[in-house]
Length: 223
Length: 223
DNA sequence: ACCTGAACACCGTTCAAGT
DNA sequence: ACCTGAACACCGTTCAAGT
View (tube, each protein chain N blue to C red):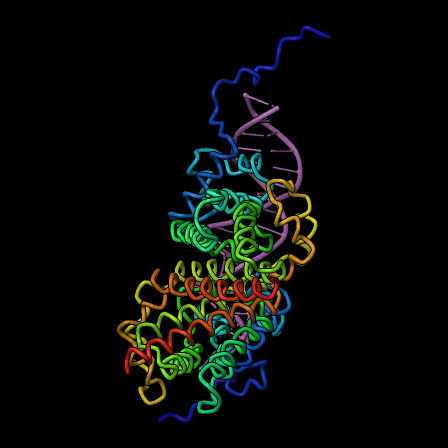
């Protein structure tokens, strides 16, 4: 209505503005670099060259930010390639992808496991896995259970790998009294293997093999 | 040498003194009741009726205290009963015990998974599990891998159960677009099952069954 | 010797002010 | 409109003082 001069801040020039995605990406980089204890609203603001409170224009709270980060990461999981391969190959591919994601962002897995809300970014993977299980011939209840088993196995193993102390294994095990801990002492040298990627694969194979057996059995009954 | 009068504070009467174990027990109770975010040095001191700084007479740091708590809890795991039962029954008993412990102290599992040093309290269980796997006939490398698989499965599943949002499942799943998420929408009603104790048992059965098969195979080769 | 308040260096976040 | 410093209510922990 009035032709008052516009307030001067409307043409305030190119401030350091970011998109929400850029802020989330910077936050993820900070977590990857400095870990959970280094991930601070103040540190992130410093990294971006903005005031701390500016972050609250992109995000309601720190908890909200962590949720956004985990969601963004899990959305990366390669969950397509629907038709090709056996159901077992498809399940394995999806779960290996999730595991690799955990290895690439180890600190994030830890944060995820202490969150109460499962990230929606995992829904695509969940759908795909559930589809694979149903295709295999498992009934719905068994499929849902198997889905929980598989996801929790992968996330649990990834979390354990993420937080494994670098040194840990041989020294402490060899100091144990050999008569009370004969097997651990004997296995001390190769004990770090229990958190290796090969161990992860071994467990995954056990699970998939067992699911295959159950699926065959259920198909026979249904026939 | 000298018979000076003793300083008065030597007979200062019954102050509120605790043993280290009592402090640890109180800390565990606080975590169980109020969760990780309620577990504060100040809160614990208040609960015990002592000054905050008095806690640092029992413990070097809060991290040290958390380590002591998890260690005390995991030491509870029923890891004896060596000889009796098949190797499979013994493995199952030990792992179910660990799972139950996680269910009883859900907040603690979360804290444990974000610790870098595996609690020494788990050594007894590790020894027992490793012994069971060797008895089954698995070679040492496979046994170590299987140990990692089993422990990480149990801890991972327990952590997931501990942090599962109370409501979560059916509503959010039913809101998904049915053409992109047909299986999840169809399974919405029973979806909470994926974190049930029955799912845990199912996964445990899959793993133990697979280990049994591998053990039989390795025994045959060794013969 | 054992306990502890004050103080310090951090947090996340509210609130009002700056442009 | 968008940004932000000051301030608040918390942390864990150091340090010196209390008995």
